[in-house]
Length: 73
Image (cartoon, rainbow, N blue to C red; front, side):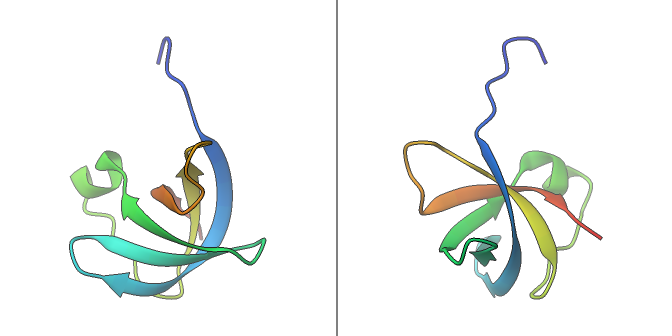
C-alpha cells in the first residue's frame, strides 16, 4: 500500500499459545518475544499452533513485542 511503513521482519518458532490470540515466539537469534496475530490472519481464520514457524513484524522501538504476519510451511 502507498505510504505503508513496515517494521523489522524476523522469523521464529511458536513455543506457546497464550490467551487472547497471543503467542510466545522464540526467534532464530535466540530472543523470546510475545506476538499477536495480524488482522489478515484473523480475517482468514489461519490457525497458528505451538511448533509452527512464523514470520514476525517487530517495531524498531520495542524489541519484546511483535505481530505474526505469515505462517510459514
